[in-house]
Image (cartoon, rainbow, N blue to C red; front, side, top):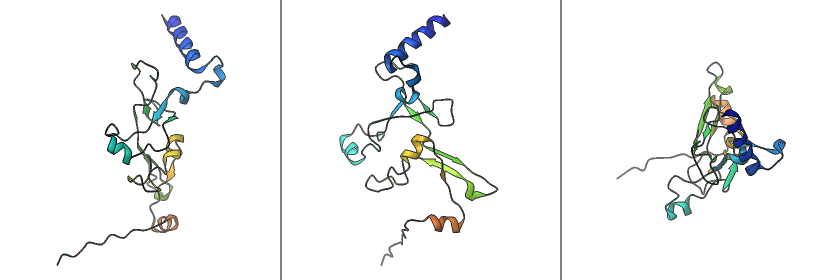
Amino acid sequence: MLVETLRAAMAELRQRLGPDMAAWRWGTLHTITLDHPLADIPAIKAQFPQPGGHQTGTGGDSYTVMARWYNPLAKGPDPYRTTGGASYLMVCDVGAWDNSVFLNFPGQAGDPRSPHYADFLPAWLKGQMQPLLFSTSRVKAATISRTTLKPIKKS
């Protein structure tokens, strides 16, 4: 049974990825399509375009730190496509808070008109942790812009 299963898996890999085993990559099979959760509604899809294009290869699975899982029972042309994953990761150094790091998907802003809508997407796809600064001096040094919100006084 094991030999038969291994032969079937190898046949599927050759069919999907070609005969050169050295060229096989998990990210070729394990793709991610980034749609807004309500993208089935045309008006929402128009306002929230896919960050980073349609399909991108990604690493990870259900059992890795870079959790990006798929449905192992899925059938069809794209059974290994990502169906979920960790959108935010954080590692804190409680002894030296400025050494903390994070990943945020897809960016710092929820507004697709903002340049920060998908600014962390390339780092998230590669698993490149970003600095999570805490001290006032480090935050000020990294600040690009500042917005001040003031309440409106009702008369």
